[in-house]
Image 1 (cartoon, one colour):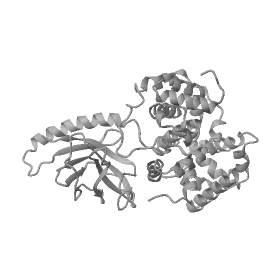
Image 2 (cartoon, helix red, strand yellow; image 1 turned 90 degrees about the vertical axis):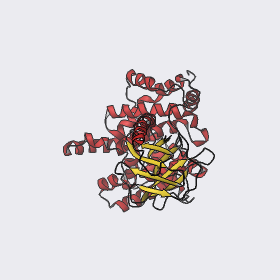
Image 3 (cartoon, chains in turn brown, blue; image 1 turned 45 degrees about the vertical axis):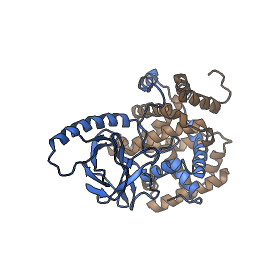
Image 4 (tube, rainbow over the protein chains, first blue to last red; image 1 turned 60 degrees about the vertical axis):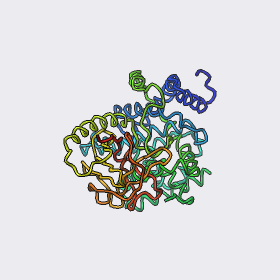
Length: 186
Length: 239
């Protein structure tokens, strides 16, 4: 696994190894990606212990479903991250996050921290990245809505509440933002 | 209900952003396999937003996390979970299936044994079911019991309150054989126990799969389960 030519190819090979029952494949994915995957999960579920739980469950799923990964369905990396993201979102929707933001003050504090983190995800994109440029071309509200959903795992309702917009308006703004983004990146 | 081509890019984006509700996401999971345009749009949307994740500052990970994963890995990749009646998609985004089904199956077997005991006791019944299936949720809690009489009638007893949105309904399914695929036994419109009849199916067998899914009002538009699984279990022959 030392031949790091192209990360995505390596990950596709690692997934193929998992599918054939070779644990080294999974270990290699863990060694290369776990640090980021835990961070991504934590950005959504807000707690380190829950984030590790998410990643742990996600790796079991990667192992058991590796044979279903098909290269024509996007990058191996995208497939792996999607599994982690979905586990994190499911945990959020199951309500575990509420357990830790029970107190109003704490919630407000965490919320503003998270808002900063969400915007930071955009600022951190490579300077010449198309995604960065295209997100930059959107109105602030649309950009914020899209980033809150993807980066922070917020629902339509939560986004509407934080942006102080009616739910229907928030939904259609995000939808229009997504359309502009697709057009810009096409 | 097929997703119209014009809506695919929007739905794919919202799916990848995690903005769809549980039922919508489950519908996408069910459709993704048979709809190449949808699968393609989702793959593209995923890769479009991926840099927001991959550019994150990695955190240091304790080796204990790998040990915990390693301990839990099933021996081979295929034995991990019970297959659902409806084939579920791998790359599926907001997939709700969890590995908990195995624990669920074990509880179901235990519950079936208890139930079989109960059946011996209830010999005074006028009509005996051919098979009984105890349906459990992912956590392994008993949710419902299906008694299939084999004469195109089945009785479904709900043992818990299900939360069903106003525009949804519960639909009962069974898998008589791989070749036939999942067949509907009927709808539980008012979330109550019911006697369902009218579906002419082969005589129910031991270990036949039964499940209840959440479908849009009026029942699944495709004639196959499309919504999330609320409960499932395997039949035991009543003897």
